[in-house]
Length: 304
Length: 246
Image (cartoon, chains in turn cyan, brown):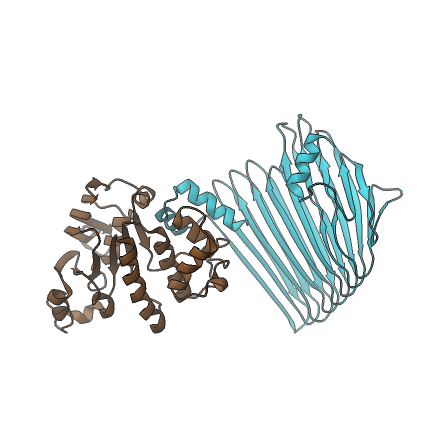
């Protein structure tokens, strides 16, 4: 494993030393390392790039599925399918780091599908970063499809703080009765970066619920688009929230779409976009911070 | 020691003559080190403006502000804070993501231990373990955030602490504690405390009461000198009598 891969991995995961559970480390479109565990089988797909991650019922484990692109002119596409057995309680650390050193663009398109069985619980962590001195664009386009069986729970924590020039994120979920989905997204864009997020959740089962929360900061001339679609097709609860700070000449658009197809569907959308409030800067300055330090602290807290 | 020399400040007001309204008019004031001063007076008299001006949030049009002999008139908020001026807002600011712990650490100027941070919260009547990791956001009630604001000023331990109407939004039980907080702060820090207040019980513990009405200091003295007149309905310190204060 070269130094760039190690550096990217340390940025997107908490891997240190030997991994005890199942993992698959993908580098520049190939498999760098793979390990199944007693309860988690990682099986390479036949006929297309990617793996099947089969998690047995009642498994409690942390699974690492990171991907790295370490050089320019790589166009990586991968299909990973997660089958999470009944009553399992797992944390899946995915994430992607892209490093470019030349003029050519590099991109990683990860298409992840989750089949979460009855009563299973999943925490899915996805951190995206871009590094390197190359002028080639660092592009990450993740797609996530989630099917949730009755009474299952999934929490998706997705973070992109630095260095990714362009991202288009698609997340779609279908929830059966009593299933709960929480998606927390944190994005910071700078320079002339572009980030687009599309959430679509179908609440098909009674008493299912979704909470989609996005916090973002757009600096310099970067642009962001946040679109969230929640369809309440039965008695259910749905909430989406877009909170954004714009700085310099940053631009953020928030487009909520709520459809209640049932009289007992309760759906809420909140969006707040604006610059850092002057009174927040003033307060922190009265504690001895300079205006720049205060601004950095407010952004850090907002994206924490 | 804080000195205000010939301070005047006007703001734009489209309804006033010449489109400007004088908020402070040639104010002269000296606050000795270690004193507990309460500024009171009718609404619109210039109290909050004066407090913000001392903290550097507003700049005077004329005059000088001196802190321990140093002219700080042209210093910004940060520089004044670093020289030992603290300010508790009348309406504290809320932040998404910044926790009570973060704010107390920033106020102290370094990472402080849980014990010390919790002690400040306890002083202001908040159960530390319930609040220390809470965000200073809209989920806090007016009274809760007000108490956290006071705790941040306590953590700074500066030579001049200014509180703009600390009692506003505080319930009766907390109010009793508040009086104790000020007493204790005074004993511990040995700096000057400047409070803007309408509350008789806060006025009662002041070394000196200053009445600010219509942008001018209309009375200044010990509570025995000032309070009796101030409590009269037709108080001569205030343009429209004491009732104008409420």
